[in-house]
Amino acid sequence: MVPRVDWALSMGRIVAANIKDRELVRDRRRQLVEAALVVFLRKGYHDTTVREIGREAGLTQGTIYNYVRSKGDILYLVCDEVVRAYQDAVARAVEGVTDPARACRARSARWPRSCTTIRTRSC
Image (tube, rainbow, N blue to C red):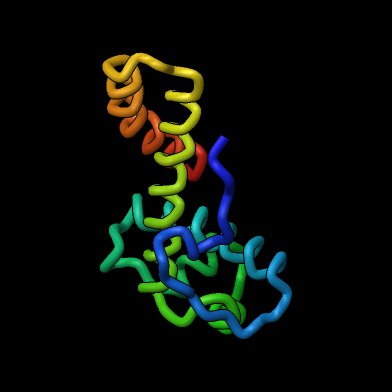
């Protein structure tokens, strides 16, 4: 099993937060990612506002800015989650597989499935 890393650190960028409680930050960011996925899929990134993401997440705009600095930070967190879901799916698919050709096929088959999982979980 691949070890889980802290939110928004797996791709090397730190997203600043004004709240010190790491568990609360992680929970709120999960809310934001799930809400952003719903709104981004419906309206697209450029046509989505932070206020709309907040409404979908059940958070006020002021509260959101305690956990991220911008809509760009939210997009980064969404992308980080997509990459993490893919990495987790690949790790599960190749766990215990010793044949390189089989491992390669298993890895390539996971991308569409991990994207579908994220989309259906959020819509």
